[in-house]
View: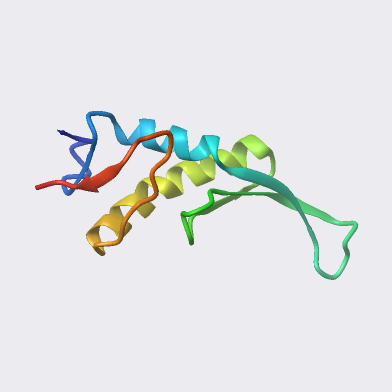
Length: 100
């Protein structure tokens, strides 16, 4: 197994990069339009999340911006989950494990 990147020294993937896992996770994501609580006609932006990645989400003015925000969030989310000893969901057969 290879270290994902030099700034993520405690995380490894099964022979692939963290970017590969994030891309697979994003393929499972859902993006929804968000409207205001007080005025349901008022468009607020776009919300994107990945099932199984509790607490990781993106919000933006466009669907693409929301997905990019989620991509950036997932980079930190994976490190926090692994450091805390929690398992990370498998997407498209890609598994992230703690480096030894």
